Image (spheres, rainbow, N blue to C red):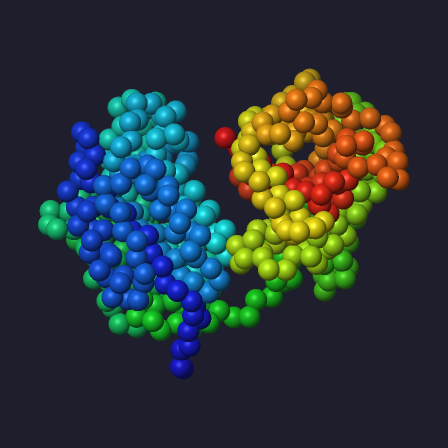
Length: 477
């Protein structure tokens, strides 16, 4: 069968080799980076290469690299050097890292999650991440946990991650010019007719054999279609977005998941099945007898205005209005909007919400530009007895209020907008006047749901100022 290009855009790579670590130098990474650069350039990649780079230099390069990626492009990130994990999160060590304790890692090293998330947000369809960074942690003497190697990562569809060895294990530096892993990967990339997944598997086989079974590379992720370094590709099958969403909802099996499907596809092919499952689950569930009235599902309705109840009911309509105005967005912005509007909800455990978060506000629709993404600020969720309180505590525009259970996977926020030089007016049971804006009427209402391990969305339909829909994205710290 004749193969045709599936990813017809650019091939772009960021290659980093760090070896000049004070107290724990590595001899191979600079050579590894140089040879990987030459190989990728020969395969048609445009390559940015850093060697013995510091934190600021790496972060700047990652930012510029992910900004260059667009729809149809192939992105490849390669790192050789020291890597470490803390609390299940992976970090890449710059040569200028001054790490004395585990708590300092997030400030001195570069989060792998930042790299992977940046590539994901770029909106391209294929990303490859190669990590020759599973060596002994040179800072582990001052660490409490003693975790070895790197932790597993579950990347989004379209991303493949190749580790030099299995999660939690360590790799060895090579005796020659290159490390064993990179040496075998470079050779495998020249294998004729092999797709990238087969290249990775062949690399693992050769490394396992060369090290007598002491080191076995590990692969995570799934791509749709075929990509080969020699340029031969096969396109992925046409996507059936609705079927994929429905299958995800079925696997979830929770009431909130079926509600998500019905919001996205109110007249969808699986509407009857979703409504049947939802009715069964709602009938089978009831709040515990000892639960306080203010914490029962749906109790928020009795504590809110009719105007705000209508705003929650209009959430999907508000998204439709906002998206109709979104012309001229980049591929990354389109992907982000789709995730915010249509991404499935995950089970929500209210007792796990308390903590501090990075948060940013996104305003959609309502004028020009049609999408505004603000910088990251700081938010907090805390408990007062049984009541959860939310507050945005930095930035000029702030909000604070209370969170109430609603459905199994959702909560309702009733709060108030205020500015940094004011005190919060609190939520009040007053309906807005016909000409009131957010300056006169400060009440805010939002739907809270979880979309990642420690990632949440608060969606505010039909705010009285500036936009058709606002979203506060929360990421746990």
